[in-house]
Length: 452
Image 1 (cartoon, one colour):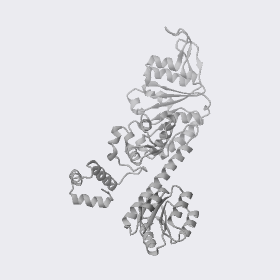
Image 2: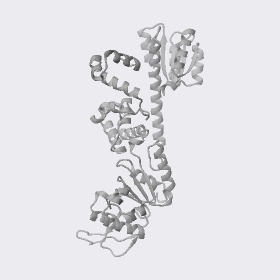
Image 3: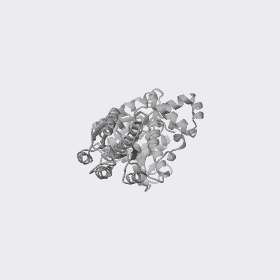
Image 4: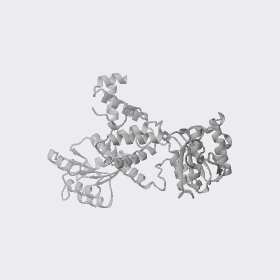
């Protein structure tokens, strides 16, 4: 929250200093105040502040010196200049040297509160962005899973725990949630990590082709089989085989596969000699397995053979805290791949991405960011780089950028602001659309701090 920010106020006028200190403390800020520019330099040397408000004209050490020293020590700290000697020249000079804003005395307290809030919010967002970058860089291991969600962390902890045991695993979850990544994660922390990890999608083949892929064939086993071919189960021996969409495997194929698991041996198509195999099996499906068993699509005995441990991966919409992390991860990934310098995501875009439902889960988010980076010509992802259906989603979002759910007041403010923007600031049209009179609209604008 911005109102947790640390503030330093520097002003050699005692009454002005006390007033500012009192007002900003009431706003919830952690405020330190001093009448001396020299003391301010000492405080800056010993402490880091989010926002500094300083008078421009003071004896011995003035506001420009404080600005310079502050930017030297803490470039991300925002400095607001306050002075009774307002001039365009001084304003330009201060802004060129990195001042955030310039307020002339006598000032309105509402103006000061607004500027301080915006400066503190900017610092908060920069801190949050840096934290996300640090998290993305530090999250690693043998298989990088980008998450800070408690459900996912528990899944990863359990995955690490069972990885060395060699037990078979079933992973369930919607398409695009990252089931194969969890499978690789388990493999990479197992005793088989230095052996093969092979993945196959059971729904991508007919029964005959799947049998050929899994078991291989002997030379001349059928027309066109000019040489012997090992199946992927044989190739994966001593390693891990990941069978995606296991419920798409035909019933007769499931019987053959079950025998391989039970006997730890297989016969190539056209072969008479058993071939011993030692494979860890990880199966996955986006279906409800209990329903699949009930409909006869999944054999119960095969299910029991595979289902030593089950992981259910939650959809992305149930772990919104991961969205900023994933956005930054994919932003970095595709910026490098496309040789672009896209470094940031606008707050408006992040708000939209935080509120979207993601029927395609993590895979869909990755595609959105990849598309955005491809279209972006600057260093920040903006609304213009989003797909049209997401641009129109803006006002529907019910989540804040930090992952929390927006209050009714936040939604009302966002909607009024959006309507005003859509009608070009015409309050008569806006009040008609909102179903309120102009006076009520004016009161709400004043209450929410919505400017024209």
